[in-house]
Amino acid sequence: MSVTIELSAETTARLRTQAAMVGLGLDVYVAQLVERSSEGSPLDRALRTLMERTPDERTALRTAILAASRPAKPLLEGKTLEELVVGTWPGDESDAVVDAALKELS
Image: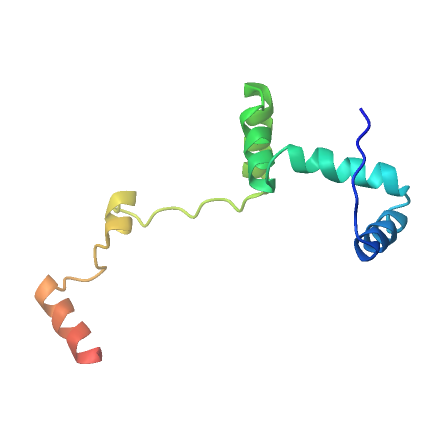
């Protein structure tokens, strides 16, 4: 399809410079800009890409991410993950003692 648009001389000059920087002619460069714009925002494109992945692609990516991650640190002996996340204090302080210490610090 062919479309004719009127642009200011300044806009045309900027587009021509940008096209030259990537080694394209003005017409091809503008066509690519319009096509990319019609695909939605970068967030829309990223979400579409994520949603279009097959289960095998998702598994491969998850495996690659986990392989690149540092290994998990072991839990403290006798502690569960919930106890560590919820905030069990390592000593025998009561909530009242902790509250008093926090008030003293603030």
